Structure formats: C-alpha cells, structure tokens
Image (cartoon, rainbow, N blue to C red; front, side, top):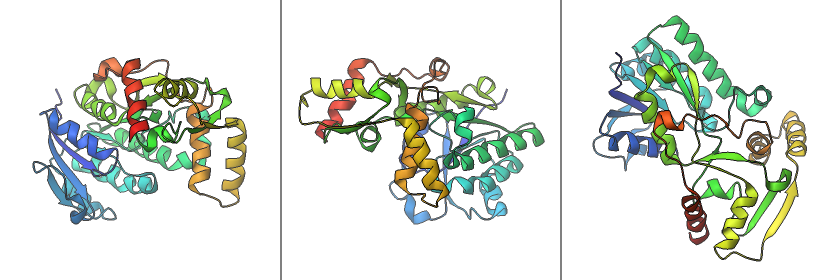
Length: 302
C-alpha cells in the first residue's frame, strides 16, 4: 500500500500555498519540503520545513530536489502556470507518486471552459500529467476544483465588496455557486494524500459554502450594512462576449481575465456549482450559515 510521507510544495508563500504548508504540518502526517527559486523569499516559513533552492528551467535541478519525495503540491500563481511542465516531467522521472498541479478554481473539465484562453495553460498541464501517468505506472495526479475562493479579504470582494457596499450583480444575483476557504483547500490536499486510490487521476470537487451574490448582500445588510449600496447589474453572457473580443485584440488585462472568471463561476451551467462534491471523502466539513455570516462580518470589519 502506497503511503505519502514526504511532500514537496512549490508556491509555498502564496495565498494558497501557505495554508497548505500549515495544514500539512499541523496534521503531523507529513514531512514538508519547500522548493523555491529564491531562498531569501522563504523567510517566515515554519522552522520544521526543509527549503531547497531549485532552477525551474532545469530538469536536472528539479529531479535532484524531488528525489525521495512521495508527493508534490503546486500552488503556483496564474502567471507561472506554464512553469509546471518541467515540474511534472521531473516529478514523474524522480519517482514522485502523486502530483497536485495548480488548477484550483473552476471545473476545467466543463467543455465550455476549455475554449477560454485563460484556462488553456492549466488544461495543458493537466494533460501533461495524464500523459506522464501513462508513461510511469507509479505516477498519478489529482486536481482540486473549488470554484470561487472564500475569505474576509479580496476573495469575497471579488464576489461582493461588503466593506465598501458595492457589487456588480450578475445574471440576477441568484445563481448558486460554490466557494471554498483556503483552510478547506488545505484539508483537500491532506484528504487526497490519505485517500490515494479514491482520488487517483481525477479532479476532486469541493466547497465550503454554496451561496449566491444576493444571499451575501442580504447577510451584509442583516449585519448592519443596510443602506448606501452601489449596485450595478450585468449578464455573464455579455461579459464573455466582451472578454473574447478584447482578448483577441490583445487586451489581456486583469479586467478581461475577471470577465472570463465571472462567466465561469457565476454563469449557470458553466462549472461554478458542483452538485456532487468530495467533501465527505476528504474530511471537509464546510461552513454552516452562521459561519458564512461570520466571514461576511469579518470582511465588513477589516
């Protein structure tokens, strides 16, 4: 029976990576090694983490760093997704048993999303994982689909800015979507490593809360933000059309990327709501309504 003990993490100091490192350590189940291009950037990591400096452009460097590692978790940022190609190749040849590439967010197995240019780099990496799993029988992969991110910070602001009482309400505001905290993403990683057979070579779909824009606005109003709201209204179909046009014209700005993302997780039937989830398998309890309300309250008071 395969057991995961030694875990390497890339992107360990980012918004997703740091909670993953914390969760792995707090579980007391794993030895954690952080791979980094710049060792100086890893200050502030727990002292029981091993840090290895690597050259992401060198397969030899990556293979050497991954020797003896049972698993690799990538939390690389959107801009660095393509860098994972060498990581996948090196992990497979170094004997890594499971890789979790950086595919957090929407369900990219939804064929509608495959046509969006912003997701093509992520899809290419997953396809690389699939290829290597065929070449190396001991190598496997899992991706984590969590739809929207959820916390009392920019992640909630992206959906509804409860602190400044403003939101662009999309498709009427009652479209149900999944939203997931960083802590539950970390728990998903732990759950994958403790349920290898059940999660091999497939995505897992998770959620901390299933909610809507209108529900979040209503919660904020109940918590004291009763008036002074600046609400605009849009259709994600229109956002998609504009995003495709502007992208084709060379506009790859954050504004255009946000249009694609909003279509992906709020557009009904586009993969932002998972009717079947892997929460129970992975040990994710999720949030009760009072706990979701507490996230909204913390965002209002920050």
